[in-house]
Image (cartoon, rainbow, N blue to C red; front, side):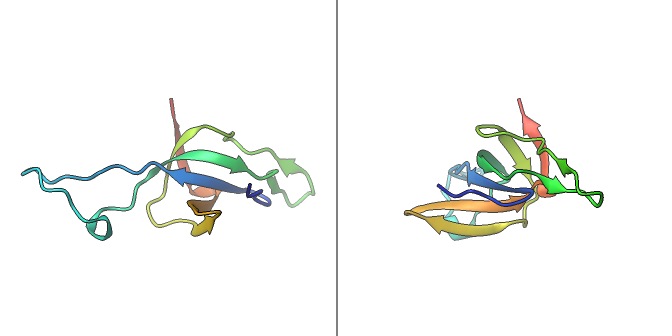
Length: 94
């Protein structure tokens, strides 16, 4: 599995089929990028200026909301993931 470094987090986007009001299913390239994802892996945390490590606020299996155009999409063993900095995560969904 991927092991993120520093304050990076590996996310697996929650794909949802998007339909219009009339019930037409949109092609995947016409849909909005999803903004919710499941946390797959978490780095060790951010190193502060004084050398201390700040532990991440999220943990594996959390469902999170993230900034729409953040992160880097990667493909690993046939699966697609998004690697983001922890600061790009807006909220944890309970």
